[in-house]
Length: 68
Image (cartoon, rainbow, N blue to C red):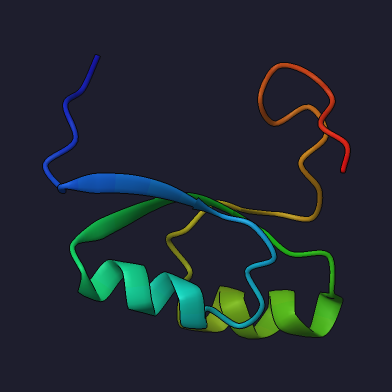
């Protein structure tokens, strides 16, 4: 297993346009995955953070269905 070189990793739920991502990234975190259902926000997030895995829903992302 590859060891993370950052102090912590996080999953960005309700990613919006990436504000939470930038805040945690500035504290040394590494975003490993993001979720956003709103198509407009997804487009902006994809432009600003193209390297981040961005999904529309959590279902199946963790080997099982996740519901809230």
